[in-house]
Length: 117
Image 1 (spheres, rainbow, N blue to C red):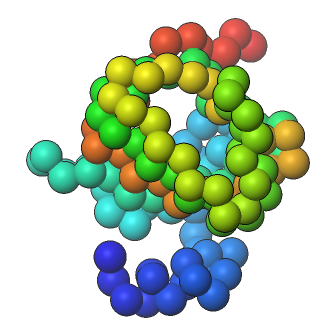
Image 2: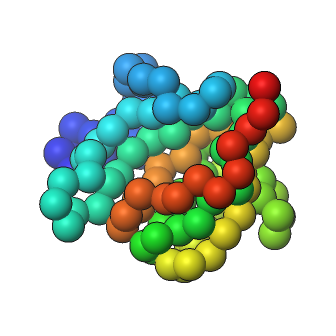
């Protein structure tokens, strides 16, 4: 991870980064996209009320909540929470208030339930 990115993460500078669409009401800023066998590392910004449908982790996923509250079926995770989702685990994710998370995926997740519009 470039030092400038590290500094931005610890000083709140991530608020000024550019984000791209990821899912409905969730945007992404790639720090390191997936490449070969290398994990993907990104910032995800959830707008209030945003969610990601039920999915399965094909590899290890780690999350650090930088701001706000992220929730899943096992609880609510406030700023500073560190979450580890094991390969093969399944859940859906949402944020009632909005949040910013630093996430690392060993492999992309498999969406199990798409939202119906």
